Amino acid sequence: MSRISYFTDMEKSVVTANFLKRGWTSATSDEDWNFYWANTQTCRSLFSAESSYRLGDYQMINHFPNHYELTRKDLMVKNIKRYKREQDKERETRERSQFNLEFVPVTFVLPADYNLFAEEYRRCPTCTWIMKPCGRSQGSGIFLVTKLSRIKKWSNEGNSASSFGRHAAVQSSAIGGGGAQPTAPPRESYVISKYIESPLLIGGKKFDLRLYVLVTSFRPIRAYLFRRGFCRFCSAKYDRSTHQMDNMLVHLTNVAIQKQGDDYNPHHGGKWSVDDLLFYIASLRGSDAADLLWQEICWVIGHSLKAVAPMMLSDPHCFECYGYDIIIDANLKPWLIEVNASPSLSTTTNTDHFLKLSLIDAILNVVLPPDGVPNAKWNKRPSAEALRGWIVLIDEEAKVGSAYARQNKANKAKSSRSDVSRNK
Image (cartoon, rainbow, N blue to C red; front, top):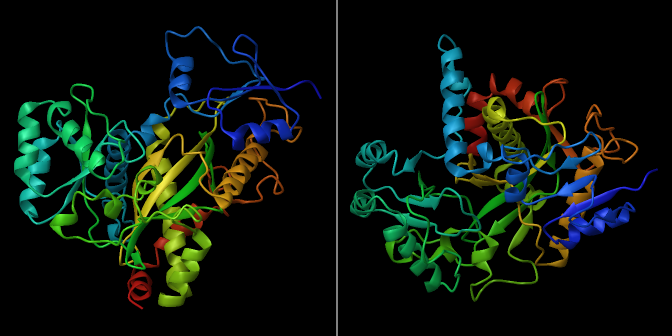
């Protein structure tokens, strides 16, 4: 086998350890490479119109050129709304109740959609809303809103940096986070979403799911769900009262925020495995309810990928491991909150380290051809052995056998069963 070289601009031990285990060598910045584990900004620069770089058949990289169609909050919502309109139009003469695509909270982009948001706000003036900067991560700049007057002030000023940027920074400082920037770029866009006020609680605490989804192609879609996802818990008990509205330790599960709290547990990191969660739900509401929840999560992820597929540049040199964040409400309905292009590979516990080390190994097993040599021309049909640790989420060529396809079929007959199972 010829010498294989890798290059990375993000030094994470779980990544480089897997490269070295395969006998790969590190390339310098002026050397050629076979496999590039890049950050998103590097990938954008590499594929930009100004770049003269052209990838060879012997090279692979870990992002699609326009991954942001799914991972930028405003574009994700835009693409899913478009997809829903298209699906509704196709099903105008069919029973829409059997094909419910309402899996993202009601969301608007500000300042562009302010009038639409105000109309929705007046329909439910007691609702809580959550505002997030479109282009930031790790909980930076997020805050809750209940008063339309505060949004009006922000909209009239026409500059999120001047009002809400400072507000978010003050909140982050109050909990010792420091995540929000004291100043933000002019005209920074935010999304504002209806807050899920009745989340499923365990031990009185809010949590979300972090699931890893590997996509090797968007045309046709080939996507795999890593079996070892986990739950991220808040360190403070959930409290809907207004005096806790600014306490992000109650409302946001991001580790970057939670680790600043006094009650954060560094030994387990405030995490549960997905298997533990499903076992817990089965013990309280029955195995059918737990099975149905997992099927619906797979279904949500599958439709989110189908929503962005027409927009994606499905370059054969590329693959992507997305970090999906999903919240489950008290009725066991899964809600897609956001998708991350570069889910954190930092590790806070021994369990966390082993999980992410295994994740990178499993990704390489799938994206590389059987001989282990990067090759953009291979057919991307991994063996059953290579797929150990993954669920075939959606495979548009195979169709039969994917989790998404099974749930799509089940949706046509599950409406009444779903209601019964959730209320057990």
